[in-house]
Image (cartoon, rainbow, N blue to C red; front, side, top):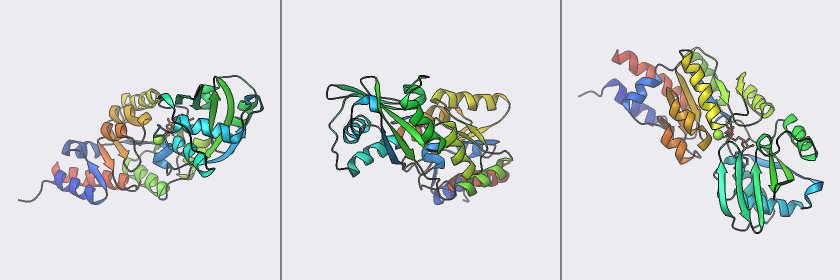
Length: 294
Ligand code: ADP
Ligand code: MG
């Protein structure tokens, strides 16, 4: 017997490195009207590097002490920024101690007990609040340069700000352009990162619709707003912070190579080969299959 069109489309998607979880998923992908992509780890390679360690005078700690504390707190996290912090410590020959009472708040950062200190590492917007001062100035300078600023707090006091830079995935602009052509709508970025860093990355990828500073539930709200306006949204993401939006959207595709387990479980399809080009490829396959079915 010849294979039904949706099943052969799934087999074809497999050849493009995309694991599509069911025929229903394949069918739904064909009717997507808009694509929303996460930034860190989806549009970008997700292997960011710490490019600067700005020590805050009021903190009383030096660079090695700060990186030792931050790396200890970030060690259990699978977030790309956490891996950058751990790598920065390792490059300097620092072997962080084992943290206790670790907890991660998606889209915000981490918190852990390191020795006798409570260490927090994460988003300036969430950890610094509106207060002015040395930390705020450092954050503003780094964000002005398109960097992601990560704040380190020890026992509630800011001790350092780290600048982190990430690279656009090769082929991101082409994939975005293809998705725009396929859906007839300009793709958007949904990110927890700051507006400036997000806008620079998005511009390189050919995206102007940028929604920044979003928590996981804000990504869901953005998707719901589109869908209430009659759109069928495809969310593409990799992180724990994307999982609710991947699940809520009409369709969800997770970037699998470095993606979090929760994202992979929440998505309808997983890009196993680490290429963004696979996303427009699978949407095109789904459309072809649907034409054969109906
Ligand atoms: P994106 O949506 O671009 O993938 P996230 O939602 O994962 O970004 O993260 C949003 C922001 O939360 C980051 O820019 C960072 O400031 C902060 N953050 C989240 N997790 C961590 C972490 N493990 N270490 C440091 N910062 C973090
Ligand atoms: Mg991400």
